[in-house]
Image 1 (spheres, rainbow, N blue to C red):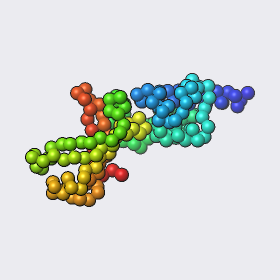
Image 2: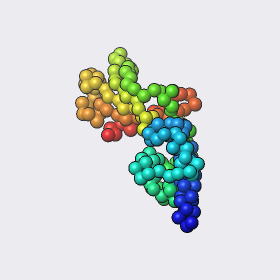
Image 3: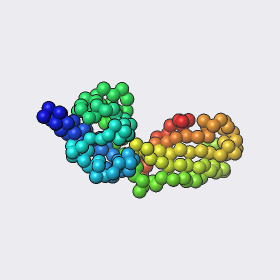
Length: 184
């Protein structure tokens, strides 16, 4: 009897935590796709009807950037121990990152060609290859300018100057990018 009660409590806590974690994402369907978990199975977790196998739990923990304590501890106890500055309530409230995600319908995954006016020489245009992709519910862009473009602008030919990674945020007037140049 004791093991049954404990199992029910674990499933209930896990379901509650998982619902809270999923709320930070555009949709439960998107979470299912990102985790490669059947929607019916995820619903069983959310409703406290079952808990995942060890390999599935590892994927869930990695996706939500948490650990296996989501099975037994309230989420607020786990998150309060986080050392990630972006998870701090002061920063989270300021940036409102959970409300600024760009959906795939708004900006589809794939390769894009970018042409822009040169910052140094207004009479010239620069061409770059962009790759839009999703990871952990966020939209990222990886860009690469041709070495000829860098040379024509008098910029360094080092690979770190030619490549950049960007995170997109939705704004009221469209979308913005948060640049993280030279991220690998």
